[in-house]
Length: 131
Image 1 (cartoon, one colour):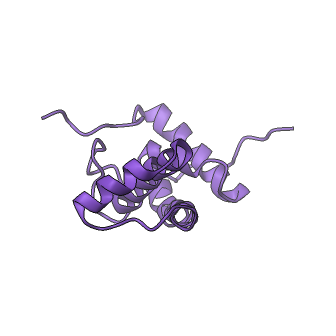
Image 2 (spheres, helix red, strand yellow; image 1 turned 180 degrees about the horizontal axis):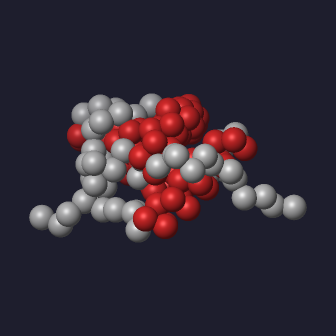
Image 3 (tube, helix red, strand yellow; image 1 turned 45 degrees about the vertical axis):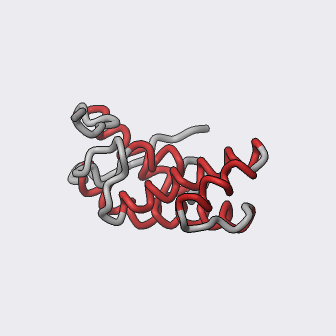
């Protein structure tokens, strides 16, 4: 039987986001590290990176794209805004989506509660303003 997570009424979306940033970052960083171990070593130079990407098979290319996404989200959670995400969104929905299924039950409950609070207050998946 599914239960609704209980969150104290005093918790705001900002407080829950602050509470979740470290656990979500840990999950994303662990996933990124696992991908790094599975992929061939990635060169730092632009030309080396290009050649590396071209040498990957389709599954490795998908994993490399996911690695780039996870690294961008980890950076966003530590203060380096990821492209396409609002700089003031300290815990974007994209990070929560990538953490789904990889967290503890308690963290998953808090993520559900955060989403519910955001939904009620109209703060869902904010994007960076178009330039």
